[in-house]
Length: 285
Image 1 (spheres, helix red, strand yellow):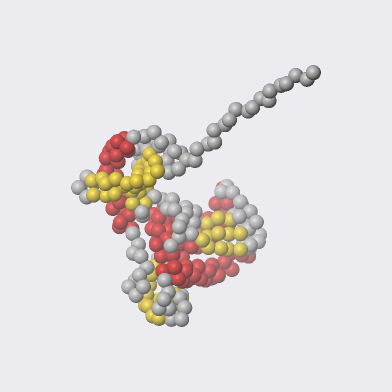
Image 2 (tube, rainbow, N blue to C red; image 1 turned 135 degrees about the horizontal axis):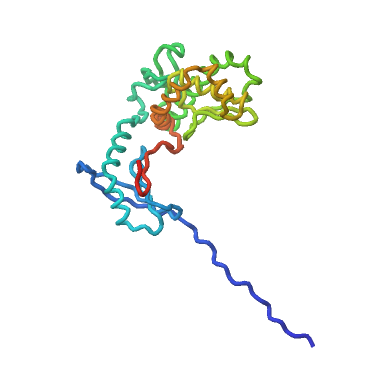
């Protein structure tokens, strides 16, 4: 006679809870008495309090178990820092692109006069050549903001490719091979990159910078066709082709956030601002 053996059941495992962000906001008075709204985000992944400022305003990030009181106390302790960062972002803010009202557009470290007219399709172009003349923005009567932003982006990419077309032939004879392709996009923190297969990506906001700085980034990425790393040999190649690369590096350190923010404001890039100011607990600027 066979014995009945009960089947052992595996213990039930609890399904992991979905971690979600909790968002709200609170009103805070800066040291000068001016009110400011601070977005408060409770993030289960956060390990410490963090106060940050970008073009969208002030944000306080709290770990799961941090109290609201401790968060507001953290903001109060850094009220002067918060005021400074908010002032800086307001100063650097770029006006939105407004049909019929925006009078200039940035290009190659200059502001170019902009004129508006009605057209059959959205198009932004020079009245003269790329080194002179004003800009004319033609728009259909029903064109919306998205069409305007696409036209601005297309114009900037065309100008950037024209610059590359002038500079690149002078460097190609001394390179082992040309880049496989060159594409432009809005980058969060980088200015350029070169993939192992030879495809080059460049930040579109380079066309807003001074041309010598744009050209230095191109040289940097082209030199990676010779040395894939940042060895001394690589920097010797850069030095030989761009002796002023250190000055251009300093330029990007001081102007980079403004350039990227300007492109975002005009073309509607969703890329986050990697240069947003932030403070982490225990609080160092």
